[in-house]
Image (tube, rainbow over all chains, first blue to last red; front, side):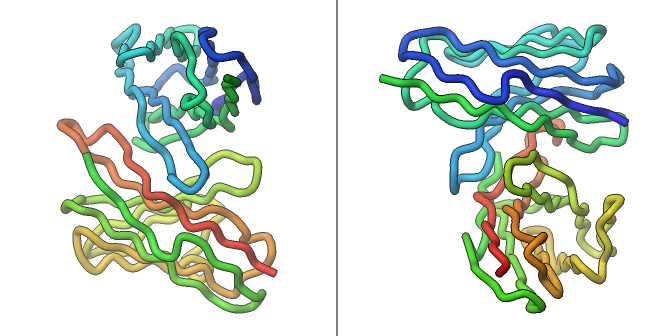
Length: 111
Length: 115
C-alpha cells in the first residue's frame, strides 16, 4: 500500500527566505506526482505536476524535483512572501489512477 | 482548467440527520471524485462518480452511508447519511482536466460539523 509522508509537518520562516518542503512515498510505481496548496475555505489549488519520467518542474518561484527511484520529491519556493502561507500537500497518482495524499506541511511566512 | 463550486460551504447538523452536498463544474467531465478530510488529517478518497453508472466506493466507505448521484456531466451530489460526530470533516469534490486528464482540480470544500 502506498504511503505518502511529508516532513516537516509545520514550518515558519521570515519573509525572503527560501522554503524547502519534502515529500516521500513508499511505492516508486507512480504515474505522476502533484503539489497542491490548500488555503482555508478555498479548497486545493494545483501548483505543479511532475510526470514519472521527469526530474523537475518549474513555475515562477516554485520548483519541484522528483527522484522516483528513492521515492522523494522536494518543493522549493524561492524568496518566500507572506502570501505563501498555506498548507502544502503532495499527492502521487498510483498505478490504479488514484491520488494518494500526504498529510501536508503547514507553512507560515512572517513579515 | 476547471472551476468547481460546492454548496453548502459549511453546515452544522444534528446527529442522526442527513446532509446533501452539491458539486457543480463549469465543463463536462467524465469522472468526479469525492474526498473527505478529517480534522488534522489528509484527504481520503470516498468514491468516484461516473455519469450513467453507479459510483465506485473505496474501502471503508459504503453506498448506504454516502449515496452519490451523477445525473449529468457537470453535476454530482454526495449525501452524508445518519450523521454522527465522527462525520465532522471537510468534504471536497474534485475532477481531472487538462490535455491528458491528469491535473486534478478541487472545489472549495464543504465544512461539516456534527453535534
